[in-house]
Image (cartoon, rainbow, N blue to C red; front, side, top):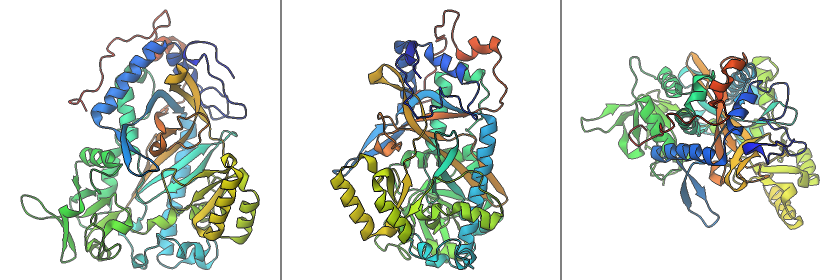
Length: 521
């Protein structure tokens, strides 16, 4: 499909690809036309003016990310953000929300089971060897029940839309899922740059996420009364430090490093100028290996020595629970639909992307015979690192990859190449909008007596033409994700107001100087 005017003049939907901003499919949002009109009526000069306003908002908020090179080290860059939002209808989101809650309930029950009776392993629904060989299995968690029996308090589930129009789960992120700060900052930048559109479009709010997270943390406190919660960060050189500081600030809790805490009499205390203060809940953004030098890596300088002793004696809660990494092992992810059937006696609402587990001989044979058609991933790497899209490899590279898989099959899974949906994205070199592949990271919170899904998420964009790698650490960008609060179509008489266009089809820039300053941020 080719568009013929304005910023969409060069827009061509690739053959065989579902484009969310232009394709018609059953769950598409009927009001996309109005959103497209708002952007299609802009000149390149006007759009760049708006885009610079958004970039200034990000710059003043200090929103950066690290891009790591093959030579080592990282470069901090302002996070790329595209103003054309991805819109999801209320009716479709309702189904996704039910599916995400279903999935995360099952994953939490799986962790409870694996660290206690292991019924699912004994019944051979999930292979015991895959669980026992996971690098993230924490033996000390065996027999321990965290407060509320909650292990996965915070999860990030990555969804992709296929050419059939349906969403599928690509993977689960349960250790330290990141990216929600970009959801909050994207929305803030959009409201300040395109505020008229928000005045006339019913979009679900995302700004309450810090309060939702704070309530989740408080719900699993081991003590009665108002709990003291802290966010434990590795420090300012971590690529997600901006997120750590933003969430701590908006939740109204202390941002601490390992040296700010200590354990005495199996109780965690925070050092302050007023003396030690007891800590009840630790939202840790540190991997298990670095959390406690007494139990894990003895050379770790990032964690709190003795914190696992305090945790296992019920004196403090750690969010997410240690040992949750076994459930976001990409080999385990393939069995989540079976977990849903086993624990919940339900059929999965959101299906998985088909996954081949290389440690299983029959599946290994299939993978090696069809390697050039598949996407191969290490089971425990994140950020898009190590992902091999095999139809882009040379014969020599395919042979080398096959040798790596055969040498350590447990470390790899393979999936069919899913042609992620595309969405209109402004590319400066094209001087307009062109299709780029996207995915969606969603955020689910489970607490004691509470569960919620953030009504929106992080739409990640592969900015390079043809690329399927959307991760910011490898040059991807993001979009604001609008979940429509009502599926009622916009009244035709409101169209001019909603899009912010005047009678000549030009953008009304009245008040556009409302861009972020350091004081506003």
